[in-house]
Length: 264
Image 1 (tube, rainbow, N blue to C red):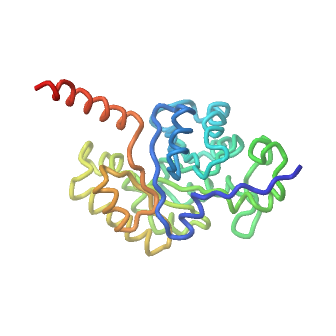
Image 2 (cartoon, rainbow, N blue to C red):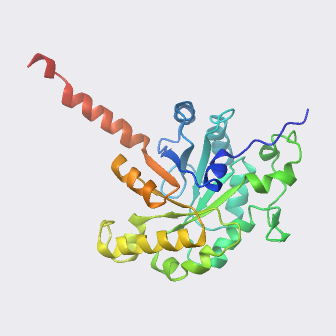
Image 3 (cartoon, rainbow, N blue to C red):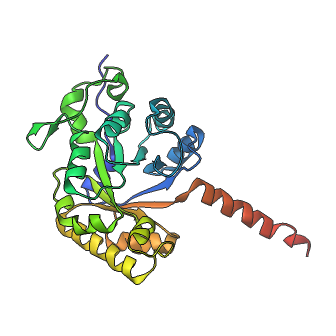
């Protein structure tokens, strides 16, 4: 029996100028992804650039995706490079939200977005019609007609070259969002480990202002809830609250700090 296409609530939030909150699961655990979905986070970030399984491992991605089935939570997958084949591989596994690292030109961004589309900017897209999991094993009604509207592809802006080409990147048709990478940007600008350096902060403000002017949603990292709230007020629409290991580490440290205090 045919099923209705599942709505991508993350894309809807960005389209409606809302703010989506999520967590980086750096344990790559379906159980934790399921827990985050039950807690109501709008996305769970799986970073396949700096760690985790191979970005070519469709079975691992499928396991993480199953943990969000039946919920409004989306898996957000970061891919290590703007390789159209990688984009198609992730989408075939059932991912509908990806962002691509190391994008420095509009051409690279366009290739990544085009790889996610059956139809792109009034022309034929470059999406492959392959693995049936993306279409729920062929049971989704009007899959081809609706899939492009439910897929979100963004890029990271994290190098000096990308900033130089920023206006052209932001003009790429159907670009879903840009994600600011202040840590890698600090390296590119010659200030490794100093995301608060004035040069880095000036670059971040430049990216944020240009993206808002172009109408492209902006995502970023939250460094504590005060920072999250400030960034939401500043116009960020996609905000990562923290990580699994960070949250667990903080909880365990607090237990040690409180241990024995009631006996003193």
